Image (tube, rainbow, N blue to C red; front, side):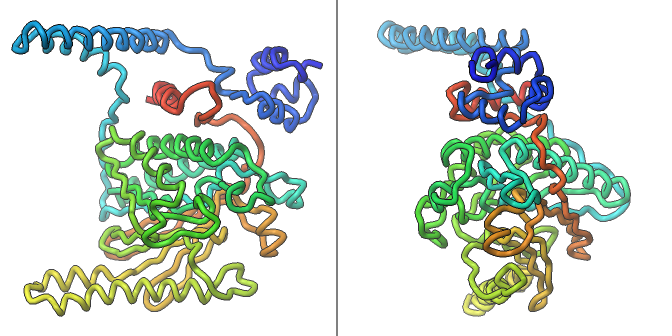
Length: 454
């Protein structure tokens, strides 16, 4: 059979040009096509990719650069012996510089702020609970959901598209968006085989999930950065699914025991050329940050305990968590009384630092409620309904992410739930993954994606 021979399978796939079309042409299930890709470790994007003339030129330049680097090192040794004061080395460096610059990641011009008649606002986008690498099969969840790495990419596309469109809508109707704040609020990739091996149904293992998810996240933020004059990426330390031990690390150990830490660092390296994008990698389980003068606190939420009953989340624990945030920030304000040199401005800053909003993920549900003069926000998951939420929690977890618009005077002026539950089929995606498959390094995948999207 054609699908039992690797070469014949690849040839037929290239004729059909997509997994969906191949299944239709051969009248087989898409699950069979997917399993063949998994069996042979094939990357659909790589099989269909044909390097352009410009990319072939870049490869030749890279090879030439390596050759020149070797020659340069040899020349440096000789020149140090013959004449330490010679300026020939400078001349050689000048001749190599154009090749090196040609291989650097391109910088992005800071986009202008779209003008509007009203006050500038900020958008806050919570990206949480992607569980990238998890697999949900429809037949195991009564047909309520389907999830894979491909579906995750397609859902992220919708989140990015919706965020950009809503930003432009607000700007054109009066409120220019001055900045976008993205909170990477935990459980971005699966790690189930580490913490719950008996329940793990996954694509890849932790390192592959980490690098692939970093590629996906960086591509999404890169696209967002083309539409906002300022982007802040807030990363609390530690979460549930990417912990490296069976126990859940918090506080001082969270940063050094979570696979999310190298995930954040890789994203930071990939985006370092974007001067208007800043990464705030917090060393603590809980991150405090300010948006338009309003104080926010974010953490994944796996440390929250307490009863919740039929609500599907620990209501008492969440309320206690928010009360604790208030206590912490009030205590910081009170500590100023002990400072002899404290100024009036110091007290104003301390009072404004009392937390207004607590943001968590983890519970795979969408909810906002007022508590102790502030608000608690729980953001839903990109993964959506699975066997755990259905069988253990007896609830339906719909797929989505949440976007808020924040006004300097009116606080949250609107909330936009971005529904991604409708995306349950495999299909084409503009994002590229495929790390640790032996085909390309993550750097090569990243550069190829940049080349096609710059």
